[in-house]
Length: 415
Ligand code: MG
Image (tube, rainbow, N blue to C red; front, side, top):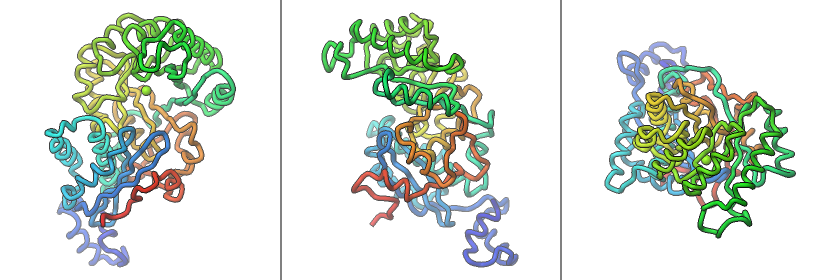
């Protein structure tokens, strides 16, 4: 860490020039060699792959920058981050938690404790951890307290419109061949002709029969060792959620996800206590406060924070630690690029109650494999957080730029 910082300050001077090195160390670190850094700029780039993602870069006066990613509610993230830029310039980026709390609290009077605001904050927080890792010469998992596991298990979201037919015939063998031990399908189908109407999400028996048929087909098509999760996307009412959870009991699902709206915690509790099917939710909840009532009421078997929208890596770790007090495992929602997937993996390595993390780019594999210069990061269904500083990956901008949202900036400075 010392060398890195000192070299950055030295610029083109040889690192072996010892008197210069000593001077650089004095000006860029404390007597205990903690680097002195100041934020000089914050820039963003917006892409559209599985939904919109905002990539964040935080620059410093020592020539290093950190990169983070925000997702899902990222449409307004870029302008929010630009709004924080002036406040961030000049701050010491190593005080990650204090910067996070400052941004969170200035949003209180705007009611900004969820949604786009916290999503944007997540991207900034992850960039700060990447930056801190690079400044200190340590991987993020080390900064977050060290790891419980070397490899982080990934499950494959199959992203199928209809999990019976040609798409399933192609994808199910591929998922198995990749070495995944768990996968997910979606059960909600807005185009199901058996629906009552296009707004009401009380499922008819015809819809429930269709869901059971889909699950049965996938269950029979994958090996016994592979776990299957099903997602209802929080659309249906409690009565439907209860019926579906009961009907799917024979398939011993890994979980049934958002069988009713996630904010309807009493209904979620009711469903959970009516069935042996494990119930999961959490991708649409924000920060530690968003999980309090859910955990207090024992509404779910598994929680699913999305680290690129819940508030970032340390916030996700806090949510996970809170869940551990309730004996609840964590299966993160994750739909981002390899940068965010690896940042998530660093944090997943650092708490005991980790179950499996989502991967959602099955329909975007050309971009996935080439997005970072290090290449494919999922091997046999696992991601291994590297020992390199920070996240440990570098974006291949030529590739990532193919997904740029037209008319949006690409890490360009403010004019
Ligand atoms: Mg989901």
